[in-house]
Length: 485
Ligand code: BES
Ligand code: MN
Ligand code: ZN
Image 1 (spheres, rainbow, N blue to C red):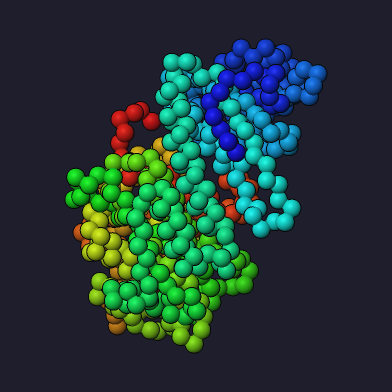
Image 2 (cartoon, rainbow, N blue to C red):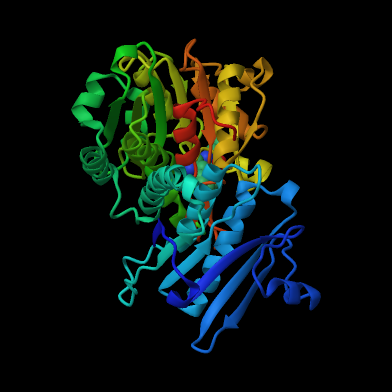
């Protein structure tokens, strides 16, 4: 989908989209009649399509609800509904009237319009023989002359965000025979070249030299060599004492190992690198927006597979930080790879703040479903910054407790830590395990096992990878931007 700001006449396009508030319908001439006949009143979630003129042109009306209750998320969802109608009509050119609501930020509006349409337009069909390669052109009309420059700038930012999300979705949706550690690393290299960040990849010997024993233990069972991917973006060279470390879980496939997963749904474990996809996508957005920040993102990429060489329940392994770990379940592998990745980004890349993002636990789906990301932190101020970022991204976050009673659950009797905490509080104990390796550095853990995947189409998230995290990490790295969100 292409989107640009351009004033076109309805006579020139097949379909025009109008988003309408319930309590102040616009000047569109049919609206009064439609309201009287109760065909369309502008309620949140409402959609109405009708024919205009003689040569099969259409208006799509979508409701936004009450003006006081308008949110950017409502705009995205309304645009998603409109886009589905566009697809039904099979239109190739579409005009959207800009949603100009008094006291509602124009920058946020254009971003929500673009995201709602483009993220709904996404489809992963590259392996279908009968795929249709057409692009839909979208024109945003009726932007006031004096607002055009600002709105256009925000549209470009939205495009960088959409692109980052698309990259993340594609990486997640690719099958595990295509994306494995080596090819994931290659993708990162190509993207680094294209968007302007440095990529370094450590091979197995180099990972051994760094003593990332916990990561190596997980990787041992696979025929595919592990890779440690390092992505560096220094947009603020003068301020090198501030470096944000992003750590993405990069299990390109998770069979569970000897603690084998059930067959049903195991294919979805190709998405166990959604954290890696999120940090890679976020790096492209950060670099293309040339943020004046320093960021180092790392991914410990490997497969959790079964062979004679796999690690086993009962093993006691070491870690880069020197903490020993008793393995009680080989399916709790993500925290082991993340432990070493967090140690690395702090000790070797000098990160002064760390965020890890991971499809870590099935338990998070039980607790929060698939719309909300669980967060654990050792620093409340850092969490507050995430909450601000999440208000801009509309990716929902929910903080879980980090108190010592939970930390006790992962202490081992025969090693420093054990890799599972028992039946209770699975998402918390998994997160706190990683936190043990963050030392005194402000750290946050985002569990996206629910929010990174959709079983079916929902609003602007088509079935498969959602690309969650890209937007929030981008806004988090950007920090307060002065404008009212
Ligand atoms: N990759 C899984 C978590 C997961 C589950 C991601 C569902 C996406 C959807 C993770 O490695 C895992 O297997 N976690 C175990 C931990 C348990 C053994 C303590 C789980 O959640 O069952
Ligand atoms: Mn697992
Ligand atoms: Zn996993």
